[in-house]
Image (cartoon, rainbow, N blue to C red; front, side, top):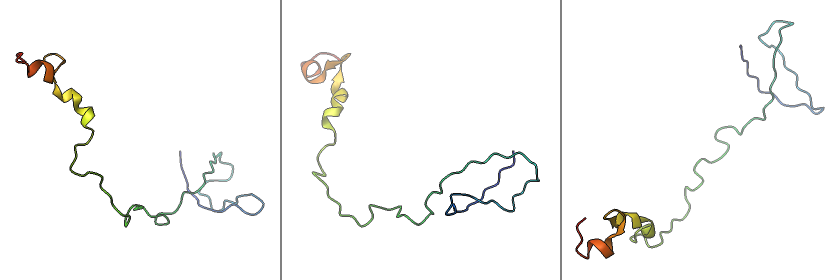
Length: 89
């Protein structure tokens, strides 16, 4: 399959005219029309650059409640109840 890319603009009457195509007269072709994406550089890729920073409690643990599994031992028993109570883990 031979692909050829052309960028053009839709005319006032809603038609497209494609000229100088690298195909022979009579060749069957498939046409897919896609809306162009914004050109690179037209939008700022660094949208947060220059924005103020704020840290809420930066030295506090993050997601402490999520680390409950790290305190489990003895086949799933609660560490504070079983391991500190002298059981062998």
